[in-house]
Length: 207
Image 1 (cartoon, one colour):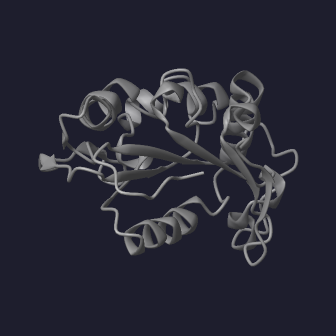
Image 2: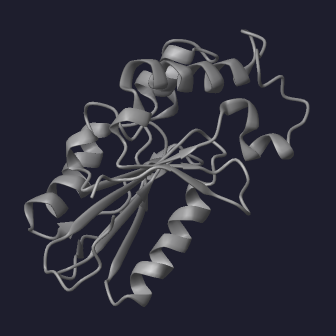
């Protein structure tokens, strides 16, 4: 589990799961818990490291392969945030790209307080490019067909979406990730978050 005793090292924590798994809410609540225990928190998300729209859709607007393989700039994420915090230098940027404006952002260079905890949420966080960075990784286990975004979009055919629809891109792209990267096996902790009011730990670190 996450050791919240006094420690000058910077700890990197990943909150993984499909779109609509409740990652942002979980990360916010975890950050509040960590701060209450006296550790400084750095909050960031993979969604601040998208590639440009042209790169994301280079394989086609509805391509699942494109969604999985081309959505994020992992080299920029590592150079801006993960490598500095892992090396102990502590000078980092928490964002690099605004997906809405499809443009880079001039995120300020920040100094991490010794003992900080990075709580980083997003999809695809157990990809080979990222897996080695996490001191603790939490997978929110919510099947795509039960993800919480569907409550607001009942028109989506989430189980087997039309291959010509945007939902095929998102659903099948995340299935590619689960087939290739086995996030259930890689995560330190797996939580069934299907019922937001009753999360259940289904895998915990061995003690």
